[in-house]
Amino acid sequence: MKILLTALSSICFAVAFVFIFCLVGYSFTGFLIFVLGGFFLYLALSTGIKSKKLIILRRVICSLASLGILFTLCMTSVVISDMDGDREVACDYVIVLGAGLDGSTPSLTLVDRLKRTAEYMNSFPESVAIVSGGQGHGEDITEAEAMERYLINHGIEASRIIKEGKARNTNENFIYSYDIINERGGGSIAVVSSDYHIFRARLLCKKQGIAATMLSAKSSLPVLRLNYAVREGFALIKARLLEHI
Image 1 (cartoon, rainbow, N blue to C red):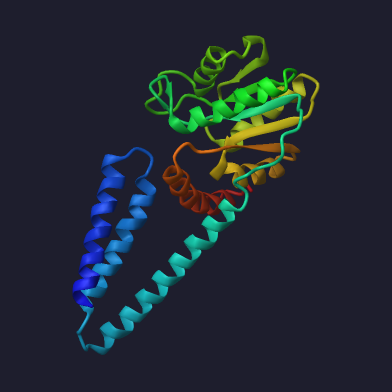
Image 2 (tube, helix red, strand yellow):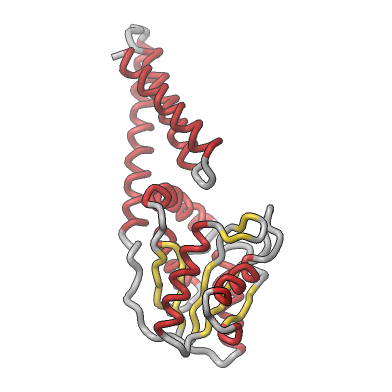
């Protein structure tokens, strides 16, 4: 058993190293795998020791670890349950939620959202896109600017795109975009976001009193989808603590 636990901890540490230092966007999942490796290592080191206090401590740690794993699975399942979003319907406006840039180049996550947006706008020629996202660390331009460039380069007329370049998070995406829509007289709304982000985006919309059709942008890489689905479960807790949802 000790050899097996040691091997499992080594595998976890190796995978965590790759996720944290060799891949972009997987650091959170890498951290969780690292913690799991530490748990296996602790079990390996404590196996065979007869100390009563250590046995009690091991039981407590095992119980907490089991609760943590169960919590992660439950929250991830909640996120996955709404990945498909809603059925497409014609809407006056489509709010496109920003994501990271590499300088001025959209990340894979943002490209997935923009592809979904372009498909929707081609299906519904009367719709107007509000591309929402400010300029973050390591970004040379606002996410809104990068999104506008992408859509124009993929055949969407500039007259059908409105830039909202102040938002720093999803909550502000909705607040500022909704203000623009109201200033223009209102209208029906669709929201484009990544599949793993739909559940939280829906809750944020409801919190702001926004009735919207949620359009799911499928993640190009299945492993990326799972990685962010796990992270989203914890993001839901953070959003609840901040009273955003």
